Length: 90
Image (cartoon, rainbow, N blue to C red; front, top):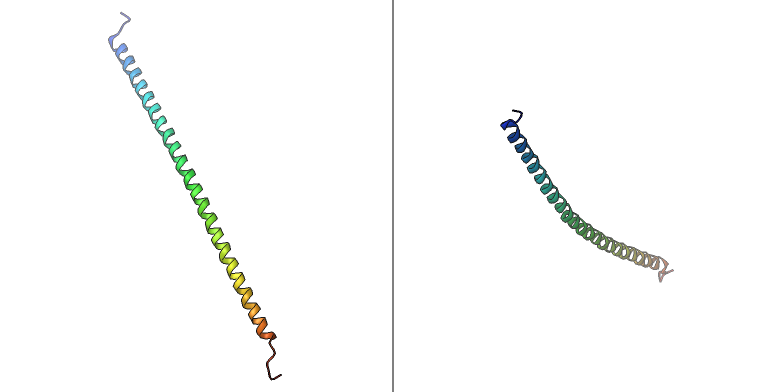
């Protein structure tokens, strides 16, 4: 008399639902871990690319700065040479 038909079916059904939720949770966690791995690789490649672009930019900027300083020096040298020239009438 202690055995009830509804109790066994409900307990078994509940266990099946819990097992299904557990399996789905494991599947989603594996998917998330996999996505983080690929995202990490993409992020690392992007960071390396960014560092390379930054190096190139700084090198170009330094070269432009050097050229501008050289031009200013040459311009100053020409001006000082013109100031140092003695006019023929003096």
